[in-house]
Image (cartoon, rainbow, N blue to C red; front, side, top):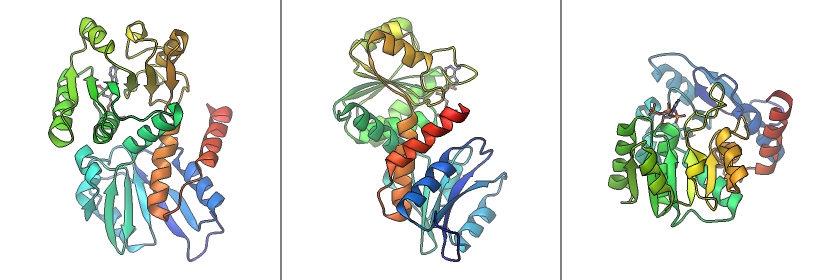
Length: 289
Ligand code: ATR
């Protein structure tokens, strides 16, 4: 960010509560690095009726904003236009405002795919995936992976019904590559033999469940890549077990950076300085995490 003046363009994060979001420091570092006159601000908003907030944002000098819990689904109804992938995912995390019109995107799945491909040097195309969880993050990741041509996505969730629903929605809207499977040890064991990437999208592994693991790592083949979208702690019990087993691992920090980098590019038209974004986040964890 340059000095704030009358030409400064605003972006921000809309949600409630915003808690310890890292997006403001990450995005403002990126604007400053690229010499862009943008400012990213927290927009903590509690309320049933978001239309006043949206009207206000539209009438001011906003280029867009990010959306977090609990508005990722509800905000879709206020959009003038939706990106196809966001529509298939059924939730948005990024809005671009142009000529008074709002277009909704979802960059979470993109963030995961880029973190996987840059972190491993491998394409997601043709991969056989075992995905744990069926919430918002799982949806964004699974739908994006299916759209990028993965070979198979097995989905396993505490509430089996949600895994089946997500799987059906992928097969219906994107490609016939998904299968919801029950949380059954024998079934999981059988399926994991056929898998080369495991992804945890649940909160199991994050405080206060930081001593728990969403999956018995003993069942995972040693040549699999194990990903956890949790970034704090940087090494969850799942990743710790995977490292001990010799698996390649990825935590959620790069997904956080790349989903933000894609939003940055949508707002500014400029590639985001991801190195600086990684650096500032790592500094945050060293001092506070
Ligand atoms: P997000 O948007 O971050 O994905 P969410 O939509 O609330 O959050 O989804 C959380 C996911 O973590 C769900 O798949 C949830 O399982 P349920 O569908 O059964 O609720 C999963 N999850 C959360 N806590 C869990 C736990 N203790 N054990 C297993 N799964 C858990």
